[in-house]
Length: 282
Image (cartoon, rainbow, N blue to C red; front, side, top):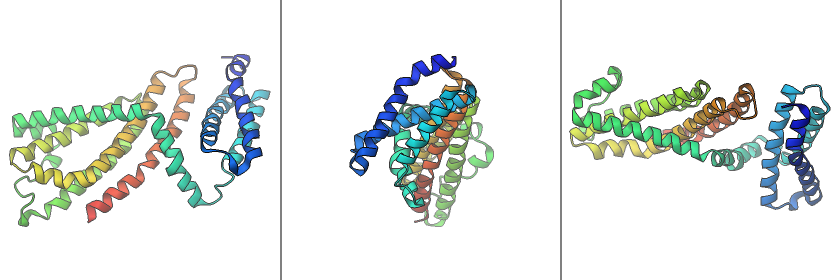
């Protein structure tokens, strides 16, 4: 795509952002929420155009124009976010929610991959509990004693078991996110394999009639951690998809843009792990 084609394709978005800037500046704090949201979306699109232009047309007038337009929009968008607390509030109340909404399909796909792994692991160990040592690494398989869960003398094993799974889930979230750089292949593997782990362990406790005790220990914090894993996995899958199908842009450009989005999504999962940790410690 040459400079003229680029400008022709995206000029309408640039003009729209100019109009939105003028409108919001006139109305100042009286701008409605829908207009602010539309302004933010248009600003994001033009920011991507600027990144592309800086890469392929660094010395052209279009890059200088976009740089000035994005600067105006940025200053207007963040004019009220002068404190760190306001920036944090904006990120979690608006930015993170918007990013999550934009890629909800990828999050659902991540959940499906994990669930498929869980079903496979459950039925494999349900058929024969010794399959646990085939499915899981020995150190993980030995960490669980289904005969002691819920018993007074074995109560000490409950926090150990929960801590093992929580640490594993945090690692999984980071690996699932980082796996996007492998065109999503590693992300798919991480999601399926860790679903197999949970399914296999659940089947082991089923064999000993302690399924209720197992899920009672896992669900309060585990569901929150799994939600974070699905979000991180969705971010990795999106990055991998954009690298595999870059569209009109280069893979380098897609990697830079989607890595930035994915990192923001990953940061948004941190409170989920904190909440899960607090619940686990109670």
